[in-house]
Amino acid sequence: MEKLATIWKSHIGLHSFCSLDSLIIRECHKLVTIFPSYMGQRFQSLHSLIITNCNLVENIFDFANIPQTCDLIETNLDNIILEMLPNLVNVWKDDICKILKYNNLRSIRVFMSPNLKYIFPLSVALDLEKLEVLEVHICWAVKEIIVWDKHSSENVINFKFPRLNTLSLMDLYGLRSFYSRTHTLEWPQLKKLDIVDCSRLEGLTSKITNSQVQPIVLATKKVQQFCLDSSNKSSF
Image 1 (tube, rainbow, N blue to C red):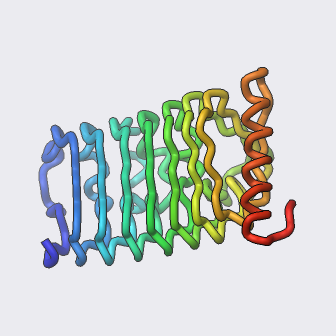
Image 2: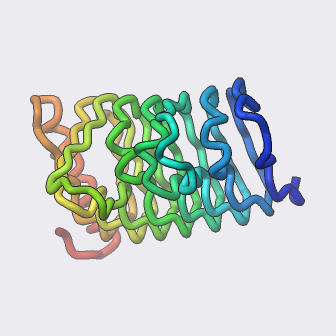
């Protein structure tokens, strides 16, 4: 499929692909965008999305041109795997809180995408109460997991991930923070925490809501300290 430049036709019917459950795309080296704006209302049934080894892909979801007067759509997407996408710039290109909801997302894994600068826009990150697994590996340009929204009026944001049990951040040399503005994090179910070769990471804050959270806060600090020491960088 190396010559495939587009998957969808712009004039397809509104109910086309409405039963699509799983989408796997591999080695399609001319694709630039996976879901362009005209596909915004056509993949509600999609549960699993896997994109691997596509050299030119820049955007996964690009719904910037969808009118915000459209009805709010709740997607069923619960699993995303993105791997070996050397030109990937955006998973979600713009803040789309008034158009699409990704509140059923359970796992997202992003590997070997060196031009990606962040994972979630703020609007998506505020609605991830079902998220269980977040893994980001070998994405050297990632500066923050959640990007700051210049239109947000909130001074302190409390991110809640009540089901998150696995957080793995590895080989993210540009990572400086989870979110660059003042924030707290709640993840009371976190059981697996891997932070490796993230020497610029300044720290993770956590809102302590019960006794289960405190060990996670301590573990985070220890893991970060170990990684900084192992790379001969000064501790924070």
